[in-house]
Length: 316
Picture 1 (cartoon, rainbow, N blue to C red):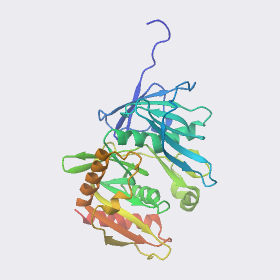
Picture 2 (spheres, rainbow, N blue to C red):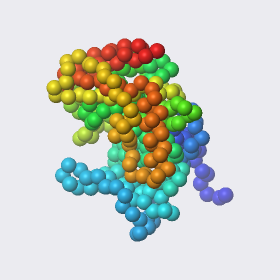
Picture 3 (cartoon, rainbow, N blue to C red):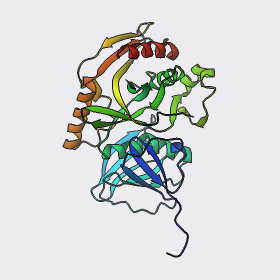
Picture 4 (tube, rainbow, N blue to C red):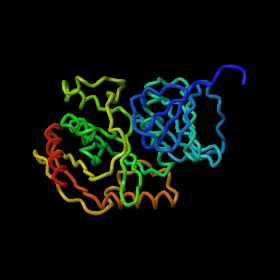
């Protein structure tokens, strides 16, 4: 075929997806997980000429604190899904989650790539029969520990502190789980972690060795190393940080799968088959060790990480 030769494709596997792209995606660059066979082809379209059907359905919208639009998701049975926002460009994902066209428009690279790893790729993973939780995860030896909690509970800080004690980060904030026989596999995410500015300032020199990737009005994004591949999920820990919480971490039993449902990443894809899969994943996770750790606002992440490490080792 005459004309410019096709550029070589590169693969980075994140959230259980083999992401293939002709152009480098900086926020995926350090991913080293092995291929899974779940292919997502990515095309970066800087002209943004793709037509989107007028009869598409708005299925989700999120607003900024001032009421302006932050993120919206539109759906069309043939065209797929359009995930977009004024700051993030337009991302068109096929209905089967195997093809993605990114149209940044005027969005800054650090903004549209952050949206890609925080929203678009997890959405694609959900379309590929993986279950996605709002959770960080670390590896202690050959087992994974999922960290779940409300925004500001300290999931990322705890995960990074655990890594300073010898654990290995699996993912920050978004966890992809795969059903494998009667177990669950925790897949590595993207090689970065986001810290709110106040938390980054509090940690200070403990972040001195971390390479910063971007800074915006909400967070500081740093480069991280990840586990080399998926690991079996051994335990789930809910961080319950309260103003009146104890000064020492207190581990408590947490029975059943109900609490896990509240951590699901995506209720937009609410077809019956996916909801059944979600319930099954939560039920499998609940078969393992599920605990709540109660703590006050002054508990330092390094102190908490030591307590969590000791508790996790006691499970074996």
